[in-house]
Image (cartoon, rainbow over all chains, first blue to last red; front, top):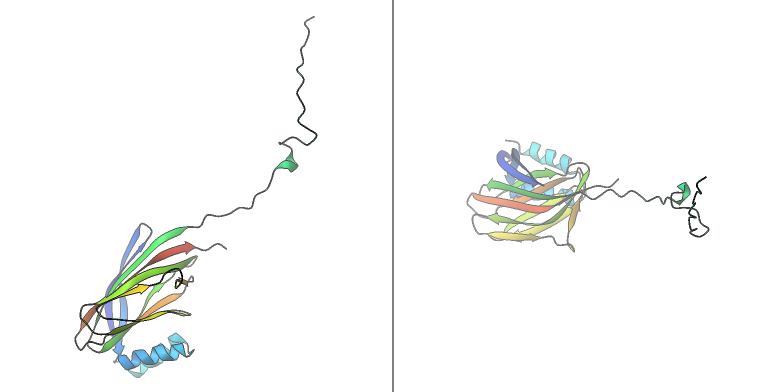
Length: 58
Length: 145
C-alpha cells in the first residue's frame, strides 16, 4: 500500500542554505523491489512508478 | 641660430615594432570553472518492514554534480538496504546496519548531469518504525558550453 509522507530537506549550495518541505512515498518491500527491478531491466521509471502506485493506491 | 641636436634612436633589428597590429598575439578565452560545495541532508520515517521511494534532488541546469560521498544511518539495527539511482544510471546499492558509509571516491566517483533526478530507495528490515537519515556531499561544477 503506497502512502504519501512528508519531510524536510536541507541543502547547502556554496554559501546558500535551503530548507524545504518535500514529499516521499512509503510502500511495501515487494512494490519497491518491483519498481527497482523493472527499471533495472530497462523500463521507464515514471511509467513503472505510476503503474505500481495505481495498483496499490490507498 | 641654435643647433638642433637630434638623438638617433638605435635600431632593434629588422622586425616590425611590438605595437604593430599584426604582432598582437590572440589568445583563446578560457572561462573559469565555477565550483560550489553541495551538501544534502534528509530524514525519513519508515514503518516496520516497509520501504520508501523518493526523487530527492534534481541537478540544476547549467551544472554537473560530482558526488564525493555520504552516509546513511538508521535509528535501529538490522541489515537495511539503500539504493541510489540517477536517471539514467545507478549510483550504488548498499547494505548497512546502523550506519553505512557511501564511499564514492575519484575511482568510484559519480557525475550526475544537469537536469538529472536522483532517486533513493530504502528498505527497512526492522519490524519497528525507524528513522533513517541520508547525507550526501559533493561539488557542483558549472558546465562549459
